[in-house]
Image 1 (cartoon, rainbow, N blue to C red):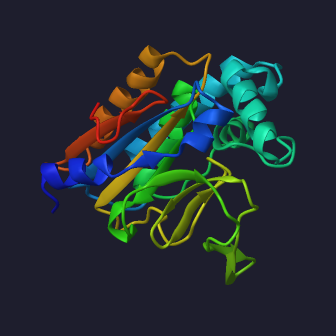
Image 2 (cartoon, helix red, strand yellow):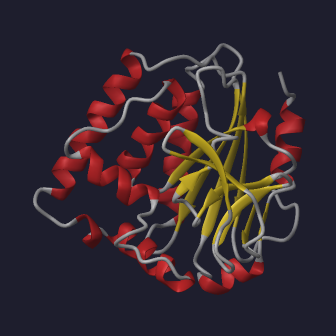
Length: 246
């Protein structure tokens, strides 16, 4: 198990490049590093959370187009700023909301939890296996040479992002393409994950209060997944000096 200081040290190494803030000065990344989790397959607690999220999404939409929701619209604008067409490449929040009407996926204990929180709080939220990281998380504009571990059908393949694409990465390659679109296989959460990194992505009109409320909800739910769950947190904004803690 990692010590709390090690979790904070990992987050303190995190970085969002100035070129990303040049695209969206209103962007905020709230990172949670968590250890002591008891993983496993989908369970009844996760089922209840997913059902609540599905119900909330149906009530929120109620015939309203997903793309008209304020935070979804903001992320569509952000995607257009660096190239991908939002009608073809959907941010993770929009993708989940579109699935919520007919039913969210059931994956595993941790993934079910953060998908439910993403929908309930209307925020893109990613989860990664911390033990599979190589170095600290960084959000940059890609050169186009970085490796991205994914799959085509049943076969594992290595792809590369487009030059200028916004990507999360570590020392070994891309961990999530197009800001919050698709995660690498290498760092995916699984039924054996005991330490995780969660990334909450916010743009205006989402307020800082709403962002922190989503993080608090996620933290509270995670602490129920073990007797000694430890959580470190860091907020990165356009005005965050290096190594400043939340």
